[in-house]
Length: 446
Image 1 (cartoon, rainbow, N blue to C red):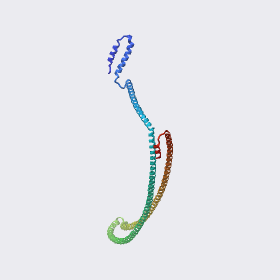
Image 2: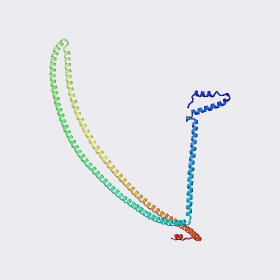
Image 3: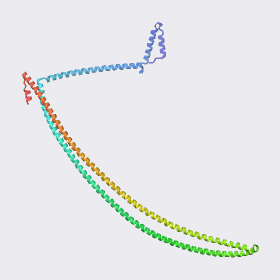
Image 4: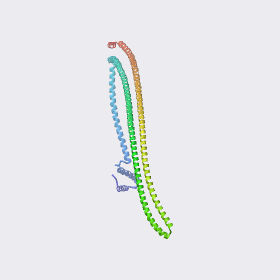
């Protein structure tokens, strides 16, 4: 519950009406009052120092109370355990007292003797059974080992025979493959030779046919060229005749023109004679006639040279085509020869590679066979060493068992001697005491 400032001032004013003689007492009372008010205000708080101290004190009290209850329970359990222990001790003391009586002691002695004899018989039987079992187990193990060794040897022999047979079959197969390959290569070579022969014959026939065709073509071309030349000659003759005719005509025309011109010239000369004189006019006319004849000769000569150049160009073109055909034929023959040589080299390389692979495979099979033989020898040696080791272990176990039996026998004998001495002393003591010892004697002599 929180107190306001107004309530606090009211309480202070009510308290402040006391006398000055009691000022010190009032001051202390005021502090206590303020502390109470503060405590009542923070009473519900859990994170204050006072609350933490209070919680710690409560925890210590609870812990002390729990420890006290635990100690009480432990004391009760200890008391109950002590009571049980005392009861058990009394019961054991009574049992020991009963065991120390003469009747119980005789019964225990008889029981101990019977148990000792029975235990000894059982030990002997167990020893015999153990020896029999060990012997049977050793025989079975030896038989199993021998069977395994024989089986391993038989398997090894069978494997060797199979490997040998497989190697023989592989060698025969490889030989057959090699023979087939050689036969196939020979057949291919024979076929190739036949094909080459046919090709050569065909080429020869083709060449002869080509040569014949070429000759025929040449002859045809020659005939055509001859015919063309004849035609050209005829054309030339015709052209020459035409030209001659034209020349004649031109000449005639020229003559006519010359005649006309001469007439004109003569007329003109007459006129010129009249004006310039006869010599100058005739010279000019002569030059004009010569120039016209020269122009006509140059035209005819130029036409003949062009025709001759065309015929020469045609001949050169035919010769170049024949040279190209011959060159292409030679290149084809060279290429065929090179291809045949390359095929032969490839076949030789293939045969060498096949022979190398076959040799490597045979060598690998031989190495594997040697490795298998070595492993079989090592396995047989390991089995023999294991058999010898097992025999040594069996002999050692037998010797240890015999030593243990002798040791036990001596211990039992020593115990029997001690027991007999003890019984003898006890019997002498009992006889001296006048007690009966028939049962003990009967037990000892039975």
